Image (cartoon, rainbow, N blue to C red; front, side, top):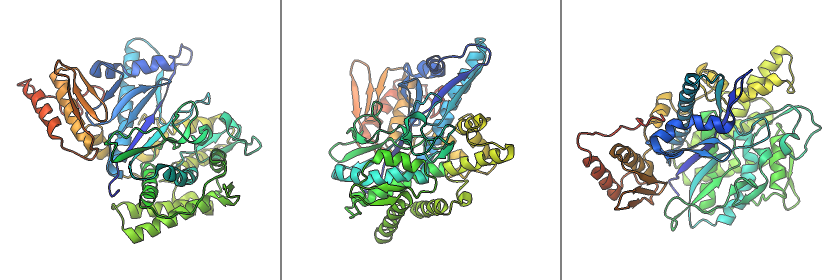
Length: 481
């Protein structure tokens, strides 16, 4: 595929803190958070004018799914726009609680674990060609995903050692730092489950597109990433792997004997040298396997050409990150790669105050790194200080909170604007646009790349014409933004 549709679904942790007073449960906090959503969309599960989806997931987790994106820039902008949107809801909820006399602060975290050992996800979606042999794709991709955390993990402090939260024991209980937050909570290589037995790859076949031509790859092993450059590298490297697989390139068989155990062992070995057992009995380090993937991708691009202008950037940062792990010197990546940015921050505090990784203060800082509130989140503070790189400018993120990317999301966004202004009840999903009146008018949008859809545009024109004198809201006028 010369073009790819990308998407990221992010589940946010929610907490209410009120020292000396009753704390709201996550369910109560989430209900307060979603009041403006329900008031605007008559539901806690809505599609927004920017093409994204906002909903309350199992476990009272606010979840934001980006619109369909056809470039890394759009994906990063849409993902960061989700942080703006949910933080705006947090501000509104905080004001509502204050008006009701409820003390305390409401927090949203873009991370993957809570203090009780529960895990919530950051799922990646990639449109792939239906003709691609899916079993082969999964077989090749799993070793890449197991070792990809060297590049794009979010980093995690383990005050009591890697046995925390059900990890396969790989140490003696000594406080430690790992590449990934999510690795300790994955239980299978691939399956159709998402919660009961979390796999690296979810195999459920829901293309959200023309099923004759497309399938959607659903990767659920990744960490939520705060850094724009880490998010771009996460999708960019995976896209290159998919292009090679789709092109039928012969890649070495690196099937792992136990992918889940290897995932956890790799996460807890910051040297990248832990010997991973392969199905054929050989042992290879995570660094070796990632370098193989990188060299294969570089040779593929040299032969086939770069399919977008950010490919050289992806390859360069991929190599630089592996070199940093190999040298055990992160100074060249500690503004770009989440686990390295966070580690530098924690190491600085530890050295200044004479702390080790068992200190509660460092666990608090680990969590505060993921706080979405611009005024207090540590990652946001680092970015304002120029200590965290960007991939797209801030104004593009703000625009992405209001305006859909140039994909099918633009068709959906126009429909939502028009139907909300018209006052009609409606039903929307990734493929269907439906006005719930007596005509039961439904438009099917199966091409995720199409920015125009004659039938949908005619429906939008009819909705707008039915309300003369009302221009209808511009993108972003939804009260949830």
